[in-house]
Length: 156
Image (cartoon, rainbow, N blue to C red; front, side, top):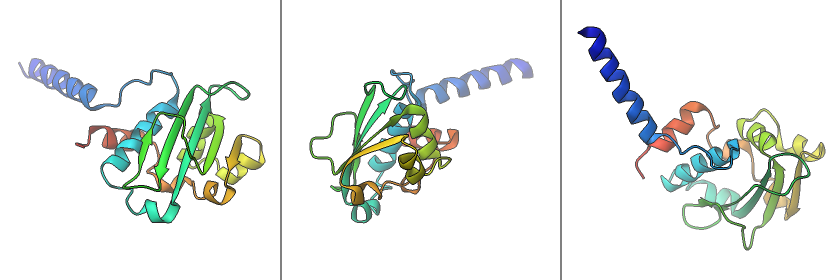
């Protein structure tokens, strides 16, 4: 009987985890999950201190492989209100970054420094370079499984 109850509890926990997890990325790119985590982080009001610090609207064009057309295009507004992340082409971005999904993930995890990515040609930047330098991995929590779960299951 104890084994059956453990299995029932495990099934309940799995169902609950599935309900609170971020949706599977439609694009198949890790960046989509990272942007969703960032969006929830800002929606919960955790990014209020970033607004006066960054004071910029940043655009991101994420490609599957270098040289391809962007698969994902996002706007991160760290200029207005409490900030937001939305999947759309930014109308008045201060800076627009173009990079591959893998490189974006490395930058967000802190394993690839943005300056190094730019110098190596892994990241292209259009627009205001001063605004672009304000995008650092420290702005948002690293996209670990724990943080993705934390910001996907939080009540907004």
